[in-house]
Image 1 (cartoon, rainbow, N blue to C red):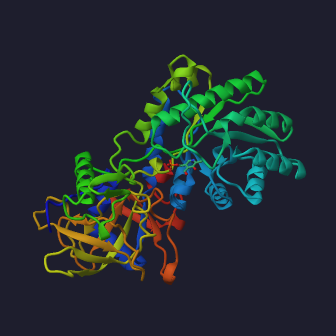
Image 2 (image 1 turned 120 degrees about the horizontal axis):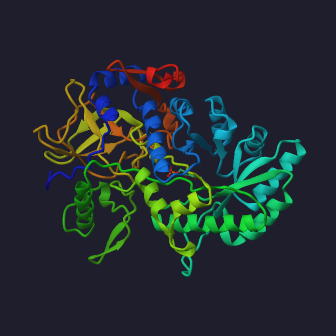
Image 3 (image 1 turned 30 degrees about the horizontal axis):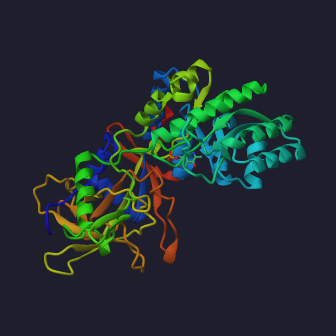
Length: 493
Ligand SMILES: Cc1ncc(COP(=O)(O)O)c(C=O)c1O
């Protein structure tokens, strides 16, 4: 196999851990419903909302946690969420209809993202809050309100292009939001549309893992709110978007070992660790390492609620160096968040059946073909590297790295007739050789890696989805569409 196995074992909470210890259930589900199969755990999203709420409580903050629906299409997750005090951030007409149908009242819905006229109209008609992306969108919304005689629409003004005070460092470039330097003219437009819109706050969403960049944006939003007050406007919320992230791995040292070995492999110091010597953004130029590792930081100890905590504790240099959380409290501003991936932590997994195991060269890396394609398991697409858990057909517990059986190196291929259909380009190490009929469980796929990229390519079916919950010490399940809060005891409480 060449060298020590380099595992990237997934972090498993108690629910996913328990599910993986139920091989009979997982095999009968895939036997009945096919492979790939997605399993979501509605009760987990409710617990995750509580975790976010506890950060609000610690900082004495009011405001709303809006789940970014785009991260998963599940009805079960949304309906279970409707039983909590969370809201939902919808980014399309379909998501808005879905949220209304799942039981969210309009005061618990925010419409974000690029919007077509139908989406804007339904948002305005049902009185959901609209996060306005640009001056043009504001004008369009105001025109719709007047034309159809609709009630005034609550709007958040989405901003971008923030600048740290005193330093000419712009935050990440974004397609979305009005550049903060154009805020004065946007506010003038809001004033001119007073009859049609009511400004309730400002917003941003930055696609970055950097707390500093987000703190700069939040500080910039606080300054714009001051400007609003100077103009006699009374917005009282800041929506800091999503991007709190998720820690996928059980062991940070495995991540360190893996990434330094990958660097060595790119430099030719050790054998390749990927299909075709792919470097995940790194390259060897005459013995010098170039490029940047284009991977999600799968080991992220400060993710999710800890990330929010850190952002709120961050000082605002242009506002007396006070922590951002304290400034929000002092001004009686509401804090809105829109976590997607972070709220879906431990909320699901994707199962794929092993169809074939080949050994092209004796003792070499195995070629394992799965009944799923790369679009069904979007971990690689999102740059998330983590090992699947093998659930043997023959029963018994899933193969952990301590089983004592010989580890193997494998390449995981998808079911499409395409050279590029690799579940991952990484050589994956497994604690023992998989067999046809075994299942591979890809853990923590609920955030973007479950249904976001799934297609009907080659007329192969997309994964079905089931909701699973624990009741009376046993696992129960139903099709995702069939789940309502009254279905499970946990949900009905
Ligand atoms: C406006 C907005 N809010 C929230 C999110 C959710 O981000 P995440 O899943 O990283 O928390 C996104 C993601 O694209 C977004 O565009």
